Amino acid sequence: MGAAQGFKNMKKLKELPLSDIDRIIEMAWEDRTPFDAILSQFGITEGETIQLMRLQMKKSSFKMWRARVQGRSTKHSKKAPEDLLTFKSRMQKGITLNKMPKRG
Picture 1 (cartoon, one colour):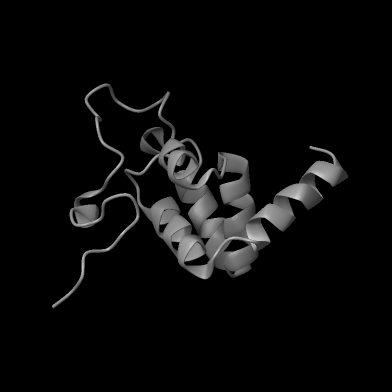
Picture 2 (cartoon, rainbow, N blue to C red):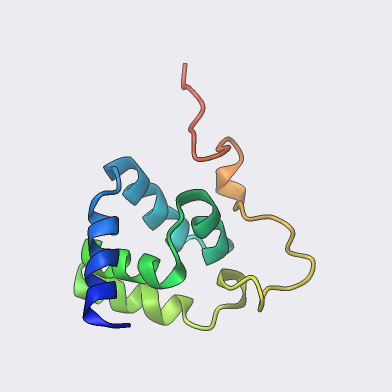
């Protein structure tokens, strides 16, 4: 990736609302949520998600996350088991299209 493309991606990431950034980070940490789910909901590629994580996390946390996700089959749809039919983790039951249900 050239310097101009990297700058364009940084600008795109910095323009995201804080609520979207928080949700992208949460999804990136979830083991069973593939990068394709982040792309379909937010238009952020795997590379851009990695850039966002690098910008938003402490260096040690980013390294730990990166080591954990790299090569993990459930984070990459093409490597995922065939019986994995959902983007959502069990913790996401009440979340639909990135909207939390009202708590009463």
